Length: 334
Image (cartoon, rainbow, N blue to C red; front, side, top):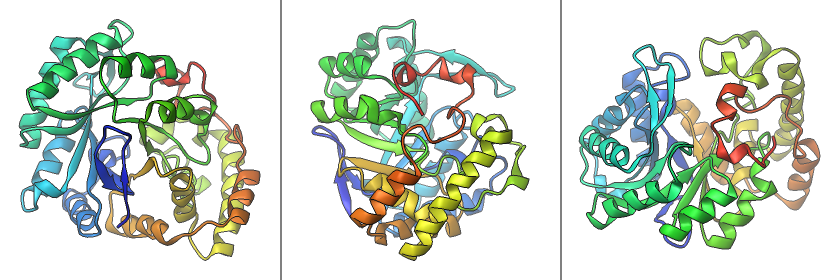
């Protein structure tokens, strides 16, 4: 397994991380035993970075990870946790809370659920519009001095917020969506992170399965997150699946699957980028790991650029109601 360092101040992790969200939430029912087996298979393959959020299944995901790691060497694993999202019993969203007191509260609960003494990378899930980012990062820095957090990260914020946060305490990485279909980071945010020495953990590298090569039109109307995603609706879906056929043709020429090429493309955008794969089954994990063996030539990269220029995707990456909470979208597109 290749390894990459997350920014100047961050940890060294496996070149690919495992996003565990789908094992607890957002993509319909998941099999607990298969989820744990998938985490074990990822660790056996050399993956060291596990990404979660305290609101994934309202704590379920953290407890699942704790169970999976109970028989493994915790020292060989880095856990990244997002916090701050508020949810209701009916799983509805109720805003974000990143006040210093809330930071310490969320952290205490995550440490308990994960069964760890410190969280490797801790990050607010979104920018709380009611709390200066300096206050949030200040509280996190205090928790670092007490040994409860090892590194501070950010998620889905724009360049101005990144600079303000980094001025309070060095930021290890920014977690943000980045894929052939979602290239808004390239407008400004990626440049800012590289200027400041901040790494990127890229989620959504397969656009929620849309460009995996496995999604078909007869699955539209899925009873999960994708049922409300603009890119999976009507004509948008038709246009996006047409793009996938271009990806499939390039993948066939390479001798790989569309998913493997899509992941390899993200990884090829810089040694400071760690793609997060959202596999929740061992077969999907095995396919995704095959991306490590895909070597994209300049000709392949040119072909992918021509097939997926910035803005090629039909539809926004989130419903409008969620985009308004994303600081990263203020100046980004696609």
